[in-house]
Image (cartoon, rainbow, N blue to C red; front, side, top):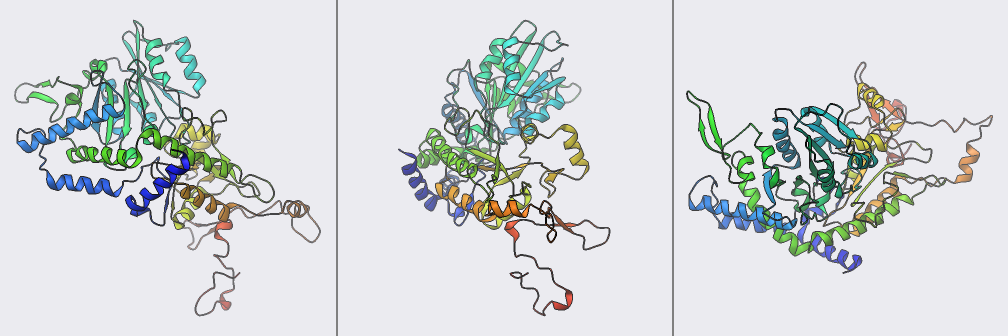
Length: 529
């Protein structure tokens, strides 16, 4: 099926299955995708028709829950072509919870562990460095390649040294895809008598629109974390896929909870016996979110019915991302300057799903080259019922590299009041974040065209190049046009914080400057200056 025909099919699906999208363009599928109506209907019918109890009991309702949970575990392994003899699935709240579970085991090792991570890791993977005995950040793919090829060791390597290498399958910032082959190479090239390297793959962004293949166990990661709501929209659930041969690592984990032990002694002696039947029995502390796991059956059934497969979703979402990327890249102001600064790897194209995912990241500049505030862009988009993501995107290393922000600049911005999500997003003449548009299974060409029209309406300045050039020459009767208003701040109360006035074409004719004696009784007409 060609892209246009499939898109028409998705249009029909949206009309029937996504009533919440009426009048809106949802462009934040990297955050979470949307749930179809039939998924909720099917799950609701399941809940009404069946009696599900706590799987830690022996009642018939409890055993039904236990069977449904085990079946969901096997279906998830099958979805990623992972052999149950080689891999296990541990259900967690989200990808971050899966990362923390892995770290608990490594942290509790007697000699600790070394931690290496790629600069484009999500904040949740960056934070893992705080529990490692040593850590380092690879600032480029080349550094990772050199590390794999030369097997360079830590200067202070210890006996029985263990290292954890983490990276994302896909950058959640701009959709760049990193080599999946690193997982197998890290184990192959880094195993020695003194050192063993384990791999932790953040697959949350990748699997939201693309299949992940574990069929070749030698090339698969040791640990992979997923956020299932990024694939299906519902349920709110995560998963940790674990290579079973890594079980000795988790034997070091000290914490235990209800459901993961066979016996606990508290009085007079302190003793316990952990469950050993399977990795998920050892690691799923407390009662599982059974209803969310049961909902996974409905989610997978409906997804396959509506969208056929992740392979088809991958082709469709990449088709849309390529259409948007080309449209934004070609936008020009009247004086010929580009409207958008695109943040895509020069070696990647939206034609190769091995190197790029369906995310487009960029910033906006006016015809004078000044940066548009991401906060204002998102606010205006929201007014127009366009949902997207702006800011630091929980990717500190990727943002710093793309925006060329040095550590001293980021610390200085912090001291000056810049925080993730606030209005201070252009500091020292540089943006501190970017705009991210991402596509998913229910996205269509209508979303792309609507966003491009939004950009044309509010951010493309139709300035004549010649008149701009002439105006730039100062005359005796005119001011030097090299100077322009960058921002306005109103301080209504003395000694209190100011309110930054929105600037740019998007807010034209929304404000008036008049003398108080001229204000009519009914107020100021905002359409006139």
